Length: 65
Image 1 (cartoon, rainbow, N blue to C red):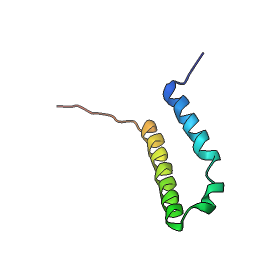
Image 2: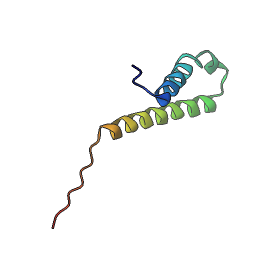
Image 3: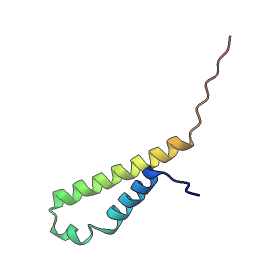
Image 4: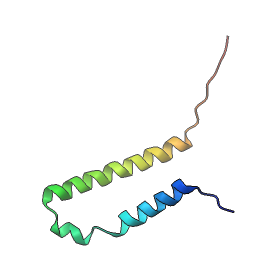
């Protein structure tokens, strides 16, 4: 039984592509480009954390008179 959809498969593929590469190319990048890459990685990490936290959040609407 397949539990995860296409989105999970694409995310996994994206993680594999970004996790393994780029280290060797860092020596060829300017300091500015390295800093931009580091900032981008921090932003991506925060977005993943926020998305995970949002999935766990339960919103309850209380209606009353």
